[in-house]
Amino acid sequence: MITKKYDWKSIRLEYIAGEISYRKLAEKHGVSFSTLKEVARREKWTDLRKTAQHKADTKFAEEIGKKQAVRSAKIMDVADKLLDKISETIDSMDVVDSQSLKHFTSALKDLKDIKGIKSDIDLREQEARINKLQKEAQEEKEDNEIRVTIEGGLDEYSK
Image 1 (cartoon, rainbow, N blue to C red):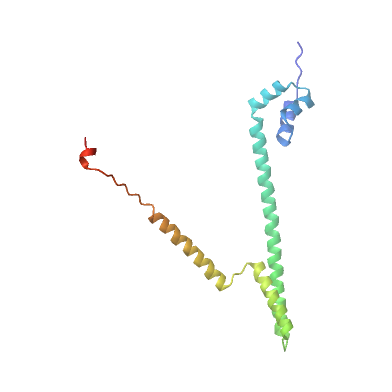
Image 2 (cartoon, rainbow, N blue to C red):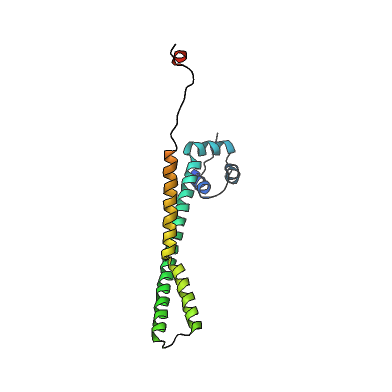
């Protein structure tokens, strides 16, 4: 009886790295489905695939996060430069007409949004919402008292 040798390492890697099913993998490599399924079960290929996918997803998310952080830093840097230019322009003007004032105000509002700066009113409103939620949570805790009333005489329950 001649036993056919298979490159199980390559087959396993192909399964772990891809989207291919056991059945298609068996057909592709000329392995019986039951043999491949048994080897995969013994070596926990499904778990290995999930782990590899999780690692790939995590690495991808980290890379996206790094790129987003760099992009955000660039935006903040440009916003700072723009703010400096607006300040310099206003300082160099002898007279500021109403149209220019509107443009500067609009640009400052946009910069405030970009930089995530909240006004005093926004901060007070946010603080009020937080206080309200804390008060509601406290009231819920206080309302959790349970009272049990047993009707009837003590003689009825003491027997």
